[in-house]
Length: 127
Image (cartoon, rainbow, N blue to C red; front, side, top):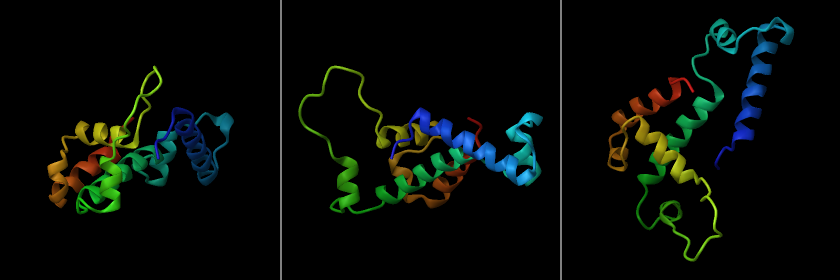
């Protein structure tokens, strides 16, 4: 599933509301989310966790046999012409961009230690 901008905004707002409720802070007090997270000892946001889990699942799919239905779905290309507009962002495009940003390649899927370190970098990165 690809998270759209409005869905990410909803997640951010919900996370902020939960943090304020957990800390007993009021919305009018204008506490920063980062400060509330630090008070609770949290290091990563919901969106960072979602990105890291997406890349983690990508490794799981890459390690499957070529004939497995998950692998086939990952490699599937739709034939035919699309309407003339910007191509839709796919899950595969997002996860490949995210993994490339921390230096992961498809071949690294078999190297568990390297993959885990890089996924950890995604989880703690700001933004």
